[in-house]
Length: 128
Image (cartoon, rainbow, N blue to C red):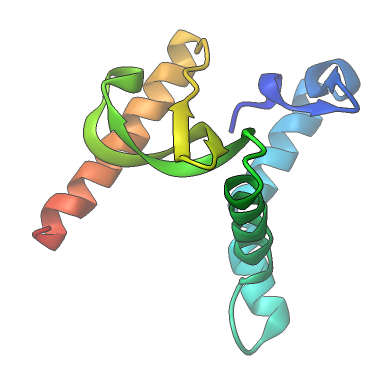
């Protein structure tokens, strides 16, 4: 997560919340899928993916050109090629029309690299 790129009514979240509060929210968010599954008892965490899918489909069908988080195939963006990664993209009638490359700090770049290495290990292990 990149809290410094998150806003509430246009105001950056770090201006609204303390660093400690943001860290607590990020930590809880990482576990939210499991929490939802536990609360539902049957089924799984499908509400958020369904809402995200509707946003993506609407942007595609109505050529809204919305910036949304999406698993997109990277071709050199963020220094990664040949893999799908969750990144911000513009979705319009052409599908993923552009991958948005955010200006990342050294720490954020390392976190992305760590995430990518994990993805690569999973893909390699799957034999795909």
